[in-house]
Length: 285
Image (cartoon, rainbow, N blue to C red; front, top):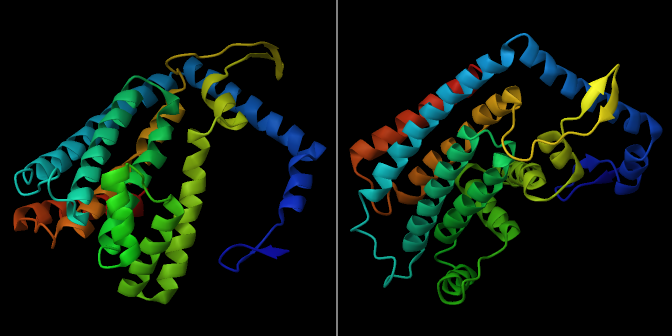
């Protein structure tokens, strides 16, 4: 048994590789995929697909309303931030959150058009939020200022690893050292999970594009869904999980702008109300 970057016990890569290449895991993976396709077909036969589709559209409409709240708050301060002449951490964070809102809109649009690969927006949103927070968390440090100048002058962004470390340290200073380690580890795990949709991995392609014809639990012909997906169960679950990206944006608005712009009381109250709404959704899911 070996340890991960935070000293926690984990399986070694060599042992993981033996497991991944074993006949047991290979056969189990094939069974899981066949069950996945069969459930997809059953959803269509018994009418569940249409129910998932309808519910997904309802969720996306709710998401769009929340995104518009963020957009309206953000745009209301456009005359207070000079993003051309003021190369400050606040100006960078304000501009980065404009991109976050743009990505939120794009993700919703793609989900509305039934694209399962909409999941790739999750990492892009997280990285943009984390960079905004990084610039503000390090604005009083020499390294932070160097990275900020590089961002404005050279179009170079610091690595997400650097952002995770700095943001976790800031979280630790705010809530305690134990939080710093747990926060960095959870950020890393989330980054790895969301990276699967960015990279052209085998499982990601098979599970989002490949819908073979199956008879007696055997694949008899190939079929791909090159454009829109008809797997409304997966699209519905993705729409639900996408809520976390909106929630992260709400929290980022509070962390980045509440005291620095500062935000009007009515905007803070609106954001806190949204934060409480998302917390309630998670607790009751």
